[in-house]
Length: 298
Image 1 (cartoon, rainbow, N blue to C red):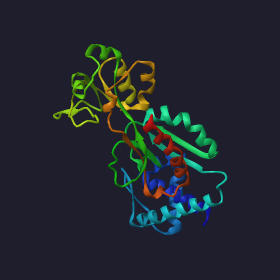
Image 2: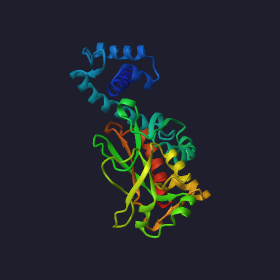
Image 3: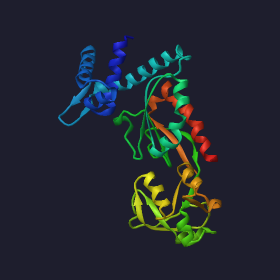
Image 4: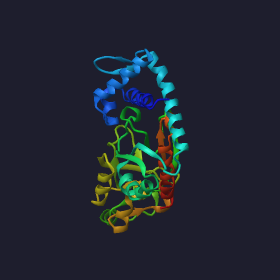
């Protein structure tokens, strides 16, 4: 199969998944005119229109949908075949991964040299994002999610669990007393994450049969602010232990009720099924799995 045909298929798939020629061009690092020309060349070669174009969006035609399914298989087979003859050089090509910003800064970035040294031909775009992106539209190959996974359209590969901790500043503990039992936490103000509760009570997440109500009038939308506000004595928080490690070690935070710590949070890698055979993706997952699995014991 000709290399330029495979390249045209790659461009076609990216346009289909991103929903537009300009977005595909940005993700591929190509000029928009080159993306358009590549798709037009493929349409002429196949003798069929592949996209239905309107002023607002681009969507696959019936022939385009048929080609899309075949193209995914062809590209996966081509990558697997190349991998059979390039094992010594490791994974190669560009991989786009998205993960929570604190996880990137605290866990992934310090360990990245080992991944890049093992795969010298691998190019990694590592996006730090605390908000959920649409994988296909954004051209992302894989996202790391903490907590429950709800997107059944994606493959969810377990990566491990994150130990959780409940913390507050020494000043807040001095004012309210060190909790000895879960119910004592009800007297602590909470810092909420992602918005104040409206019309429904929230409770502290503790490993005990009791329900402990949570009350607080401050909310933040990112982990940096969450930890910073806790260090300033504005309330207690619950977060993954790796997020709190520096503040706990320096004494800016104190762990509360460690014997009733919140249940560990599951971590998954989510990716489209068509990426399953990607050697680049599997190299990344094989590297990150033990890294995150070790956090349960931290």
